[in-house]
Length: 281
Image (cartoon, rainbow, N blue to C red):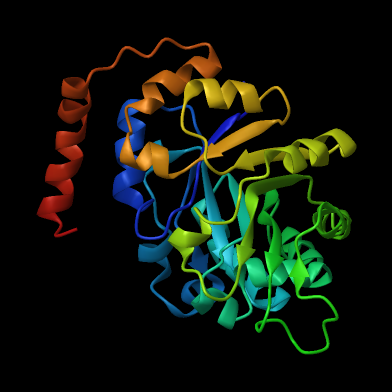
């Protein structure tokens, strides 16, 4: 069955230990790495940064980049690790990320994102996907030559997706809130901007050739099923991190009755914990 559920990339949360823990519960959803900057891949210990356990498949590497060249070089360097998909982050609202012209900031520059995807596709045969918001408020952040810094209308997202999809990418993961680039931290950006699911549904309806995955505020199996009436797949983050046993319920999306218990999960996880402890990790 095609992937219908992903676990969202979360900085300082979806590390290799959490991902291995998830695989003790279920082998169904697509896992994501934390967001990793292209510069970190190009300048850091790549084996430590990108290495993962084979049981983590299917797994997506999410990168953030400032330039198409950086994105290309990072994907080229990641190729030997055999990720299932590569995702470019155009949704992170943090001021540190925006200040380096990455993440949600790039929604104002769809041509740059399209060129990034084009270059990334030259570095790998793996599917490239794009994660973004429904819009941005770039007041005091975007360059002065922008006539509009509030790019929060459906037409703004539609234009972004139209331009980026011209690069050949056909899957977009949409967090159904705008990103406010100044004055809110990432946590506030997940809570204060109102959720706008209908615009993501509309994006799918008007672009049936694209794969649209919805993200933001999804908490239950019922929520997931309702969204799947309108889009191709769903992404859940904090709810799974805070309540991982929801994964047992979510396996029903795949027609699977997962009966694993907490005790069985702990027993399966112990050898991994002991191995990591012996290696000082």
